[in-house]
Image 1 (cartoon, rainbow, N blue to C red):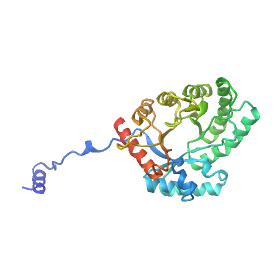
Image 2: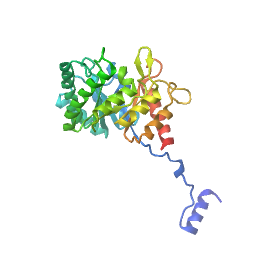
Image 3: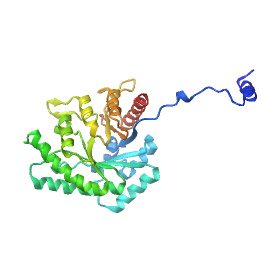
Image 4: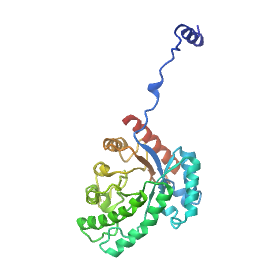
Length: 304
């Protein structure tokens, strides 16, 4: 008796086909959603092979990712151009892609300066990006802490907290959160940035823990795992930055499983953004993004 005849016999006898249960082989759903950070595609954008407007389509069609995180520098000067933002929105909608956040890098404007006017200028320069984020349907913009050179850490915390509080007030009107990434300097000191969050203490201000940015100064690196642990209680997003992979597909400079367990243990259920930051001479952006996605899915499934 062959397999087909056997199945028919069982159906006739019981009304139910005795087929193997494949449900245990199906991957468990992830406890987080995956998004793609535009910085991963910096090379094709800089080379002119794609534009910011192409990003949603490429994320969906090339990588199978349906949520994106923009970088301000890739469409700076268009943040108040309503026609441009409308087109970007349409392109995302056409692909069924969610606009998650804008990473705003305005390094020339000092968010933690001791000078009140310099901080106000920084605040004013960030407001159009909050408006753009609202237009695009994002939940947040990411800003940086800078301009505190010469200040003691406690003073820098006070000045940066003042900026965050004022941006928070503006962001609330647009239902936009203001989030801070550990992006070098004091912001990569987990205790310092967590202290700023406690000081601001408002619902629409939080962190964007980044797995890769641990450099506090030229001669100091913060403990990566402690940093993520300290920032996760305030996280409104996570940046899964990767650099290189071994032959087994593991990130060779950090333990992604350990980091993602910290993310899960914090009760996080939002977007984890793929941000490939490796040397593009050694691994292409395409391979870097694909390898990160595969690793996150594998680790996430094991933790779910």
